[in-house]
Amino acid sequence: MARLQEHFEKVLKPELMSEFGLSNPMQVPKLEKIVLNMGVGIASQDRKKIDAPFEELGLIAGQRPVMTKARKSIANFKLREGMVVGCKVTLRGDRMYEFMDRMVNIALPRVRDFRGIDPNCFDGRGNFAYGFKEQIVFPEINYDRIDEIRGFSVVICTTANTDDQARALLKGFNVPFVN
Image (cartoon, rainbow, N blue to C red):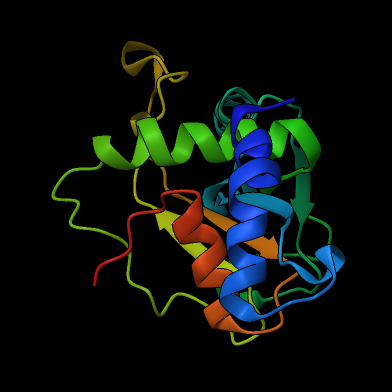
């Protein structure tokens, strides 16, 4: 069992139950999945440009990404339906908790000029989204082997009904929100 998952079961779950007055342990908000998405628009022009981001996202996530394709054609972007425009990974279970642990304890402190995460990055239904400007903050990425700095987004989906519950859950995992 992952370290954060054990922390959730033993410490965080009872705290959230008492904080929100929940009677049933199944009502406690928990992490459902984490989705990492890296858009690579230049890949529509040159198919080989997707290989490096695909490999890097796989290293960061610890599992193989899936290519994302354009759903419709857009002439101004020289984009046709079905062209590869990025890659994504959906993490669940132990890999999800391991990624969350690495993100909070290793990657976020390595971000330049980091003062904390804006607490308004929630969607109104308990899901949280954050964007990294560069992939090199993760220790799995070898700085000497990258050809280009790329950003990617991280979406944390929870079972929380409100943003307050999701914020309390993520604070319990030591996500550094700005006060």
